[in-house]
Image (cartoon, rainbow, N blue to C red; front, side, top):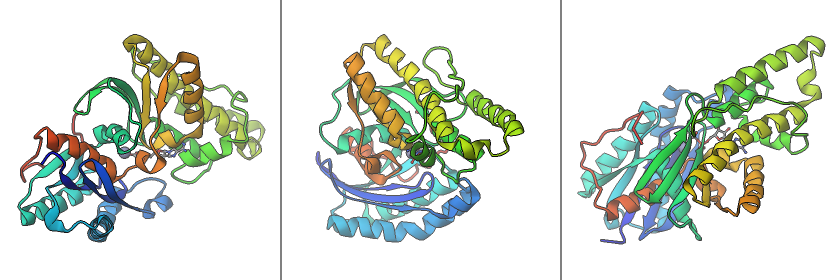
Length: 335
Ligand code: KG4
Ligand code: ZN
């Protein structure tokens, strides 16, 4: 059918999620976040797979129930094929495949980063093609040109750390708990973004690098602490505001360049870091200046969720891109 009923499962990192989408309309989206990793200061792969195993049955059950869709009304089951943690991906893939086999329906294997971009189609108005998407998460930083739901290519990406990782590592240096990105954002609200100057790393073409600024912040803090052991406590808001300004500006430099090079003025952001208020404000200001049309998905569609996997699967299903049960997860699935 051209308006398929799809169940989708996301399990690439530390969120177990299931969603039901019918004819491109979202009927349910259930997300179980794993709290266990907080005490370790990062995602522990072993613990992630175990938590996915515990969550997946109740999460899928609830998604179907909320959507009021019986299992035998499903046309296909989608799952995240990669990129992500192998053990975590395996839980979602195995579940999707066995359920599909039982129901005698196909599976749809979805690319996690493409799905982040297609999350824009869960809401209206959606961006017209072609548009640019800056995908910013804990694992990725990519500038993508999107010509159609299935035709997209990377214009530039990070050559080392992701911007979310940079936020989290900077937060850790400031003594903030994991994940520190949202906390930097919160403290930055009352700080001066020009208080301290950190390195805005410019890579060739449209690529990014976030490892230099990390070292830059580390050495700066070490030097300051020699004079004032409580330097961070005394200047937390200013430090957070300055770090946030630096990371956001690093993102914007290439976004401006990409927009100028391609002539595309429909600009979108996706991924967990699009929650950042500094980035949102900066984009709104840039939009005014350059006459951009900016699209930012609702928060719940920015962080990892199965609704975006379902949306990507919807387009793939319509294009006949359904898989058999031999398709397996790939932690480093190419774009
Ligand atoms: O997309 P996501 O939920 O998970 C993946 O990495 O796939 O992104 C999580 C990342 C974390 O690094 C987190 O610190 C960051 O997004 N993040 C933020 C904010 N909210 C989440 N970074 C800065 N400011 C925020 N408000
Ligand atoms: Zn993600």
